[in-house]
Image (tube, rainbow, N blue to C red):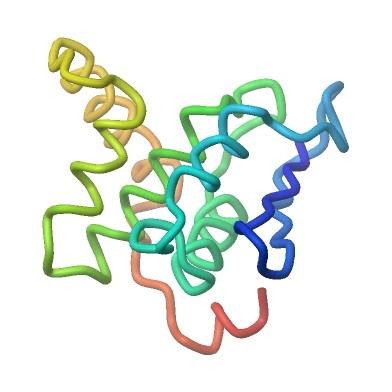
Length: 131
């Protein structure tokens, strides 16, 4: 699957995941999220580069990738790089509003995603600059 991500009025970012039948199509929910994060407090260029690195490490078939994997990867990137809990809470707020009942499922999927990357969540600055 291939997602083109546009940050507000800045340059476009492209996330490429394994090819699928939806190849080349923009995801409207991800686009809405990026527009919602106007100050780039949750999805700056560095964090989006980490998302790309996570997708390249995850050993998933193309049909297994879903929209939630973008948000899981972005959550992981924020978890690794930010000391502040606010960006991670912003992801939950965008996804679920005030409904906390979905959070356990999100964390279960997060655990499975980390496992699919063979527990390699550290991304070097050099890797981010390559993306």
